[in-house]
Length: 143
Image (tube, rainbow, N blue to C red; front, top):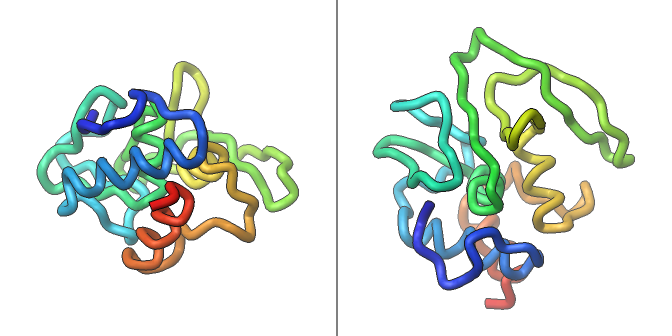
C-alpha cells in the first residue's frame, strides 16, 4: 500500500478521502479517471501492494484499494458474478471483469467506494474528469 499519514484502513469519509489523496499524490501517474482498475502486470492488487508501473486507478479504485479491498482486473472476455447496488440501495447480481473483493465477497468498485465515502448515488463523482474528482475528494477530506 502507499504511505499515508492516516490509519492503514481509514474509516470516516474524511479519513478515506485523505488517504486517497495521499495515495494519488504519492503515485500521480497511476491516477486515471478512465479506468476503475487497470492492472497490466497482474490480475490482482492487494491492499498491501503499491500499483505496478503502468497501472491505472480512478478515484473509486483508489478508494477501494486504501480501504482494504483487493482490486481485480480480469481479461475483458472473462467475467465473474459480483454484487452491485442500485440507486435505491437494493443489491443485485451482475457480471464484471473489474471489481473489488474481500474474502469471498465480490463487489463493484463504484459501490465499495460509495460506501467508504458514504455517498448517495446523486453525490458520486465516478464519471467526471480528474480535476473535478480531486476537488470532490478535497472537499470530503476537508482540505
